[in-house]
Every structure is written in structure tokens, then in C-alpha cells.
Length: 251
Image 1 (tube, rainbow, N blue to C red):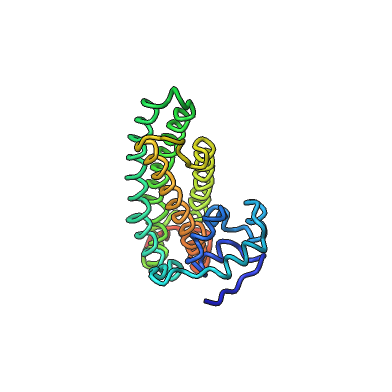
Image 2 (tube, rainbow, N blue to C red):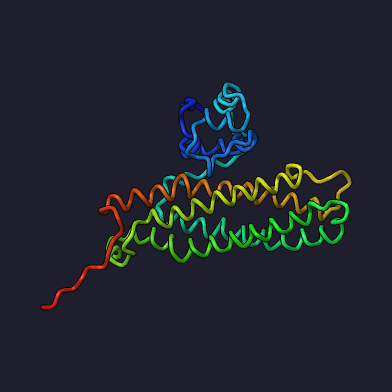
């Protein structure tokens, strides 16, 4: 597969164009979700990766023959993508966070005296879970219905009187906070590496954290780099700053 990329291409644009490179970017610890606006040059410098090596690996990457071609999320409507995010990422995160609550509590009870960091890990996961649950509710009740209305022009007059950028900015801020939480989790867990001889519960806790982190990266990418820009563009096409209800005049 022939790919076109330059050091000044943004990571978000790269992933929208070549979604099969996500696993390779994860391997190099390149932030393609919250950091999607950075260029490849900037992202490589931040991750302390040699830019030439990174570009070479990305250009040479070949998916396994048996791999299922990645879905083109950029080709989906906002309604389709919002539905997909709710049904896939929100549902998975809620289940994973509930499971992590149980696992980390068992780890603290059994091994907290041996590794005091487990207690802070428990607090960090609890705070992350609270923030993510609140974030999901605000997306599902406010932002996503708004984005769906932007695709149904007959309903635009029912929208709020301000720009969709306002809730999007709030969601972007939340995403940055989630990214910081996962960075702290990695600090507390030696990059999600269980200690030698760790019990099965401890190992499962770190495995699930790694899975949730990967899923959250993909989740945020779909919002930051695809869904949210599409919402802003749709609003601009319809006249810009929000859509007030028409004011009726007496006859």
C-alpha cells in the first residue's frame, strides 16, 4: 500500500486517512487522539522517537493478510458515528470501569501494604470513572442529540442559541483530563507492568487498564478528529453561531 505523509502532516489527519496505522502509533506511544492536532514532527519529539525511524516504520507498515480492513469512520454521518460511539465505546468503558473498581479493591486489600501505590491507583481509577461517567451523560443528553439535529434541518430551530463549539470545547477539556489520568496510571503501575510473581487479579487489573486505555484513545480520536470537526463544519454551513427558535409575531 502506497502512503503519502510528511513530517508536517498532523497525526489526526494521518489516522483519518490511514486508520490501519493506529496500532503502529500506539507502539511508538504517539498521541493520536488528544494530540491529533500536532504534526508528526512534533509528536515524535514529544514521544522521544526518531522522526526518520517513525516515518520509515509508518510507510513500511503492512497489515497482516488476515486483518479485517479498518472501518472508515470519517465516511459515516454524524448520527451514525454518535450512535456507534455510544453503543461501542461508552458501553465498553462503563463495563470496564465497573470491573476495575472490583479488581483494584481486591489488589489493595491483598497487596496494599507491599505496594502503597495501589491505594493511589484506586483513588485515580475512582476519579477517572466518575469523570468519564459524567462526560458520557453530557455527550448522550446534550452534544450528540445536538449533532444529530444538525443533520436534520427541519429541527434546527429547536437548537440552543449559542454555538456547538461551546459543548465541544468542554468535551475536549474533559478528554485532556482523561489523558492526564491515564498518564498518572502508567506512572503508578510501571507502565502497566505487573510485578514479578503478581497474582492473577493484579495481572488482570493491569491488562484491563491497558485495554481501556487503547479503547479510550480510539474513542477520543473518533470524536476529536472526526465527529467534533464535522459538527463545527455543519453548523458553519447552516449559518454559524447557533440557531434560535423563530420569534412569532402577533397577527
